[in-house]
Length: 334
Image 1: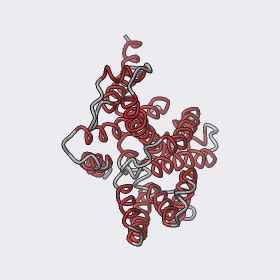
Image 2 (image 1 turned 180 degrees about the horizontal axis):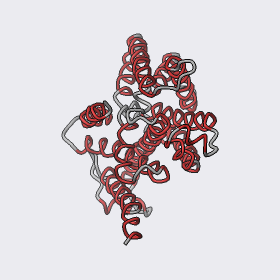
Image 3 (image 1 turned 45 degrees about the vertical axis):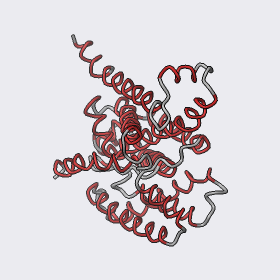
């Protein structure tokens, strides 16, 4: 009986999440102005599709679908790490201002005109922006001889994030029409980097960091129990905190730089994941990645399958749907 309950608690949620992701993946491949039936998809993947079908699947739809999956996974894992390190349900790359800092540096990169020549520099630039933003937040939120307050950290992050957003808006107003439109769509979560060049940058970053964090998940479990407990069990707290923080910053920065600004995904997907699989990071980290992937891919597919303008960013739909849940979390944290 206990084995059966453990199986249901650990395996069934993952099977369900993977099944949902596969279903949405197939639905997304078949959604758009030009219809591609499941039989046509089978022909494409077996090498028997027409040139037009191959073009639609591999050049137009597949890059955006893969981008949705990896951006969602990166933001979900980053949010799960931050919530565990700070022991606060409101912590995420968005609320801490890290996404805004990464975005500001990316906009500066665009403003200087270097982005067209060196797109591979995007994650590096965004990571530098995220590290600078995180450093300022920790510096301003910390007090001498006092333990770092998660609430003060989040409030500082929100304040700095607002400032970063103002500077981003100021710079965008000084750009030409095309650049200004790009910035506005990026801010709304447009999944702009939907091509194999940008994916070849994002995918290795997400896979490498996700694997590293998962390997050290037991340390994250111990840190989540409390700093004193972690120190008592021999965990090098400062080193672990810095390592996990840098991993979360790079995951969110790379996702933000190439996918767009998805504020709520990094905060809400860990909550849903933990309700499904529990707080053990061996389970909650991959579950957060799956939930984040489903959120972004489902939002993008719903927009493309509806009568709405297909150019509406997926991030807008996620924001509209997630706002009530965000308010619930704020009320719960009081």
